[in-house]
Length: 88
Image 1 (cartoon, rainbow, N blue to C red):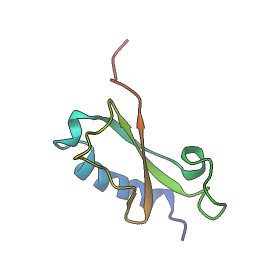
Image 2 (cartoon, one colour):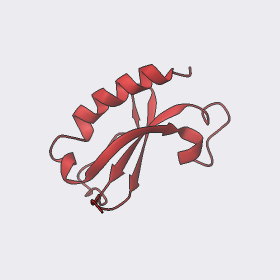
Image 3 (cartoon, rainbow, N blue to C red):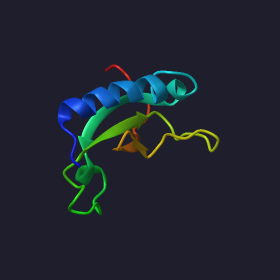
Image 4 (tube, helix red, strand yellow):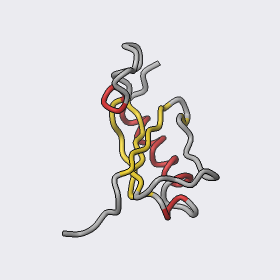
């Protein structure tokens, strides 16, 4: 079942409080956003490719003893290492 943007936005806000802006995750995360599954997973099947997903931006890879779920409340979660966020 495809969730509406407003519902995914609410889920993302809850997710951020658990996995993005809290220790120990905050040492590795830059931010969190909403994307489309097909943009993050080029091999996504046609049933899910247009679904909204959560994307977590990491400053560096997580250590082996720390992980972010690949799905949260029926919303797929992707991570992307983008490096440190700096002001220009």
